[in-house]
Image (cartoon, rainbow, N blue to C red; front, side, top):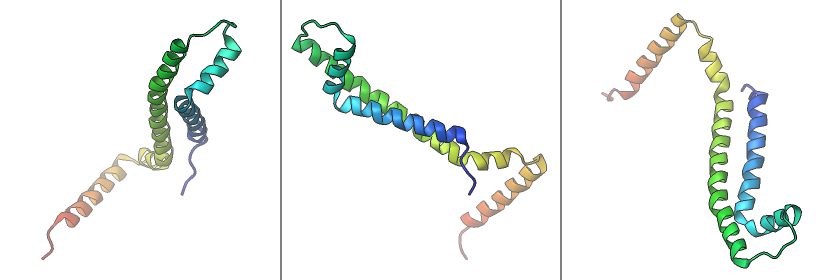
Length: 116
C-alpha cells in the first residue's frame, strides 16, 4: 500500500485536534467559560442568567461546529487514502482508460448474469 501524502496527514491531525477541542468545549462549557472570563473579562459581577445563556449557546453552537469539523476530517482522511488510486487513474492514457472501462464492463456483465 502506498503512503498517504503528508499534506493529508497534517490536515487530519490538525482537524482531529480541533474536533476534540471543540467537542470538549461543547460538552463542558462552564469550565471553558470560566477560564475565558478569568483571562479576558473585567472583574465585574456576572449574572447567573447571563452565564447560563452563554453556556447554552456554547453547547448549541459547539456541537454543530464539532460535527462539521468531524465531517471535514473524515473527508480529508478518505481523500488521503484514495489519493494513490486517483493519481494512478489520472496518469493513464486515453487508450488505457478505454481498455480498463471495457474490462470493467465485461466483469460487470458476467457478475450480473443469472447462473444456468
